[in-house]
Image (cartoon, rainbow, N blue to C red; front, side):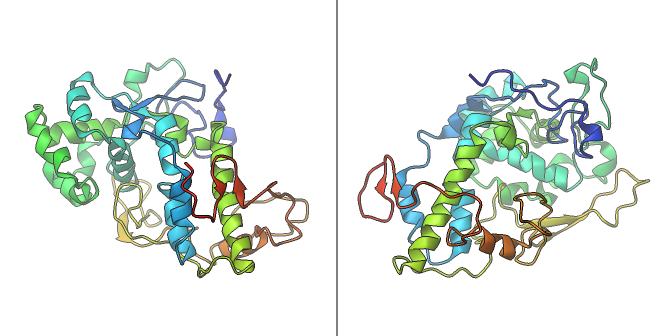
Length: 335
């Protein structure tokens, strides 16, 4: 039903962020296929090692947290993240990695860490690839100039690989399957290709919309429940960075001082929330509804989007009852 959904082509006049072929997708995703892509495996791991979508019990557990920062963390993670990975997938690594990837099972960390290498300035993308450039000649890479004389092991250490991809099997199994740190860095630098759902282009995929609507509906349920005295939690703005992993590095890389004439200079990266995530950061969205008169901060948008706000231009048909789950705040164990 959803075959051949188009990705915007010749998008440079629409956005300053495109891939080298001018497609409106992540710059590091050099896939030249002009359609929304999916794969049922993440580097040969079917459904990224997941056996089910987020369950009713997952949401009911999240409803017991006492701070929205923890709820945000769970919404970003187990309550919706696996769906992005299971549907998007990741492919494009050499066949020689198959046995190794099957042995480590959960393989999403490799794309996530490759993106972190890109944000740190190690991975470079071609500036431009013509439509007839073979995909094999339009790939990401790590130039020698950004390595500052470091070998692969040193780069992986500086970039935080051992802290972010921390499970021992990832590292202990490399030599077992005939791979070295140099091999791993080369593979990471070439990135491969994800489906749209495993990238910032996820809104192209139709499943993105009911998935994110479910997250909003859950927060609506919690806010109404609090107003009725059925739930107690703090709405102090924040996010629970209680882990340090490839999808939540809590790291900000400052590119503002980079000399654009030196394309191999890397940014300064520090542990800090990115601009746009803080309570008083301004969101860039205009025209969200007819009565919008200016830009909103995160806190202002949070207040406006409350289901208790009569000016909200839409509402969900129900909050407490979820088909398949029953009463979301009950003790039932429906899945």
